[in-house]
Length: 151
Image 1 (cartoon, rainbow, N blue to C red):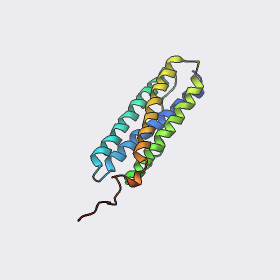
Image 2: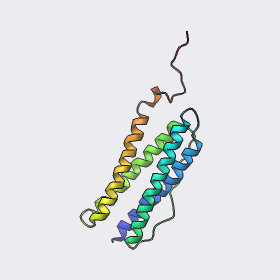
Image 3: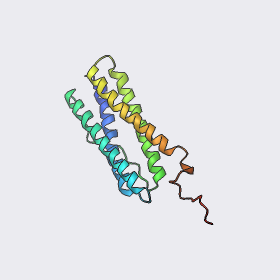
Image 4: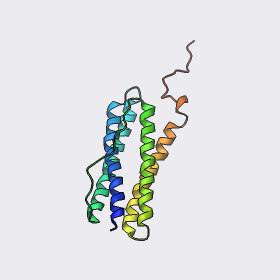
C-alpha cells in the first residue's frame, strides 16, 4: 500500500489514541447532577475510540506499516459544556481524517474502503449526537440558572 495512505492512517490512529485519553479524562472529571449520564457517555466514547484504534492499528500492520503509539495533545476542562464542545470538535476532526483517507484509497482497496466507511459513519453519528446535545444548551436543564418560581 502507498506510504502516504499508511501515514494518513497513522494520523487517524494518533487521533483515536487521543480520543481514548481525552474522553476518559472527561468521564473522570465531570461533576454535578448529570454526572452519571455524561460520565458514562464520555467513557463509552473512550471505548469506541479504542475500538477504532484497534481496527486501524491492525490494518496498518496488515498493509505493511508500523502503527504509531503516539497521540496528540489532550484538551482538558472541568466545564460540562466545554467538554461537550471539545468532544464535538474531536468527532468533527475524525470525520475529516476518515474522509481524507477514503479519497486516497477509493477504487484501490474495497475492503479498506468498507472498514473506513463503517468507522466514518460512527464518527458522523458522534457529531450528530453532540450537536443535538449542544443545540440551545443555554436554555436546557443543564444550565445552572433556575427558571422555576416558588409561590
